Each structure stands twice: as structure tokens, then as C-alpha cells.
Image 1 (tube, helix red, strand yellow):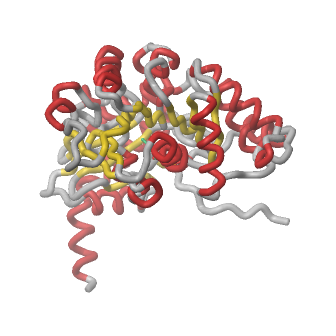
Image 2 (tube, rainbow, N blue to C red):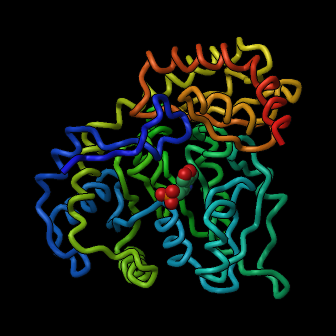
Amino acid sequence: MTNTTHKTPEINLRSDTETKPTPAMREAIFHAVVGDDMVGEDPTTNRLEAMVAEMCGMEAAVFAPSGTMTNQLAVKVHCQPGDELYIEEHGHIANYEAGGPALLSGVTCKHVKGSFGMLDVEELEKAWRPPSIHFPTPRLLCLENTTNIGGGKAYPLDQYLRVCEWGRNRGLKLHLDGARVFNAVVARGYTLRDICDPLDSISICLSKGLGCPVGSILVGNKEDMQKARRFRKVFGGAMRQVGILAAAAIYALENHIDRLADDHKLAKVLAQGLATVPGLKINVDDVETNIIFFEVDPAVGSATDFVAQMSKHGLHFYAMGRQRIRALTHLDVNATQIQQALEIVRRETPHIRQNQSSTSASY
Ligand SMILES: Cc1ncc(COP(=O)(O)O)c(C=O)c1O
């Protein structure tokens, strides 16, 4: 039988979620010992959960299909209907999880002004609504590290700890959306345990920078993780012989953390190159990890025009607003491809307007 694959783009800068498992990861998947995880009998998943709990310095962990699910499990575990969670205004949990807090947990989100997706105590204090008969019950504080829409920023440790302390003093539970927490750890040089110490729970994605095809893990205390396991079943996320995915995750945790520094370096190179292209605007100093945002001048075209033009040449980005474009570096892009990407952008940016008018002329 022929192994038919979709046409793969030559250079995919759309997201670190789109990486393919490496041959060595596929080998680990091939050799995975499996059992029925629904009844706790998948040895590889059990090993993964124990390994991640240990790495975090927490009691227990639950493996789930996606970061959205592990975040929403945390909201469900910590909150009751009528409760409110505090989150930075661009936070993934509140904006990109399809209304999950309201739909699944009856929870409202209090959006707090931040900077690059990160919270600080001054803005939290302004947003704070004390417990009152008029307000939803404040219950949970959600942080994101690194930030996605904030542009891949990693919290400085002191700011992070101050925010956590504020939440604790206000009687809130603390959850971290650590979809890309290893990018933060590698970029800032703090440890995963530094980050987990103040938390009640953390969600860590395996299918982003770490390069797994599927999977995310929720970590916390035993009692909360037991509840999360039950809700995972309710949400339809309890899996069976899922050790094949856990094996990929173990492989990634053993082999793909330190290399995130390469992604960060390439993101800087890409940003420096884009900064020299007339018609594009980017602040290179804002680039800290593997996520970069840049803008295209309206005189050149829209973000959608830019993305469409580059796409024709096998270079893929996401338009994230009228003029705003996002690029991510990851396991499946190397230094040569970043140079090729820059050549394509330099060559094709002046043609965007021209192509746009020729398409509209064909209406
Ligand atoms: C910060 C952050 N949290 C959570 C998620 C959700 O992960 P998933 O796509 O696995 O549901 C994403 C996805 O991009 C993300 O960027």
C-alpha cells in the first residue's frame, strides 16, 4: 500500500502545534507498552504522569488529549457555577477555548489589563471585585507562561511570584496555562519547580514546542487530579491504550526541552531579518522565545494578502488581525529554512499590492 501524505509546505511558520513526530519519537511510539488507561492500567501513561508530577514537584498528573481540555479541567476542578476567574485580557482560557468556562463550568471571566499577556499586581488590584452579593464569586486566578497572543513572553520570576502571592492573599486558587512553560524555563533560566511551587495546578502541552503529535497534561494535588480524572471522562477525554501517545511524550520530555533554545535563537534571526524588509514593522527586542508578531504596512497590503502571497511560495504564516501576522519557530524549521523564508519575504513583499489588484480585477 502506498503511504500517501498531504502536500507538506516547505516552510511552516504557522504554529509549533504542526510539528510531525521525528523518526526517534515514532520508534518510541512503536515500542510503547500499553493497557487500558480508563481503568488506570496503561503502564506508559502511568509512567508519564508520575514523571511529570515529579518534575513539577506536585503530587499527581492526568494526561489528556489537548491543552484546551487540561485548562478546562482545571477550571472545572477549582470552580463552581457562579464563580469568576481572573485572567489577562488576551488569555487563551478566556478567549480561545470556545467559551469553555461558561459552557462547561458556569464560570465567568474577569479580563484584566496586562502587558504582553502578562499580569501585574497593580492592574489586578484595579480589577479586583471583593466578594459581594452583587458579584460572581472570585475563585481562580489564571496565568499564562509563555504568553501566546502576548508574543511568547516569559514572566520574570519576581513578577510571577508577586502575581501568585496577590492571588493567594485574595483567597484565589492558582492555575497556570503552561502550554509553553518549557519555553519560559529555557528562556529565563528558572526551574519548572520555581514556577509550580505557588500553584494549585498547571497545564503543560506536549504537542507544541516539545513536538508530540497529541497531548497535554494537568498536574496538581492528588485530590484535585482525582476529580480531574472523573471530569476528563465526562468531557469525553478518557482514553484507552493511550500509551502510544504517552511514549511520545516521555521521549519529548527526555530529548526536546533543551533544544527549545534553538527555536528561540531562530525566532530572533527571523525577527532581525523581517525588521530590514521595507513595509514590515517589528520590534526585535520584543522577541523572547519562539513566537513573533509583526505588522505589514497598509500601503503594502493586509495581513491576509501578505499570508496569501507567501503561501504561494511555500512559506506559511497566520494572519492575526488586519495588519498583524504571527510566526512561530519549532522543531520542524531549521536555520537554512529561516534564511529561505527571509529571501521569500524580501522578494515577495513588494508584489503583494500588485497581485492583490490583479485578483480584484478578475471579479
Ligand atoms: C497558551 C495556550 N494555551 C492553551 C492552548 C490550547 O491547546 P490545544 O490546541 O492543545 O487545545 C494553546 C494552543 O495554541 C495555547 O497557545
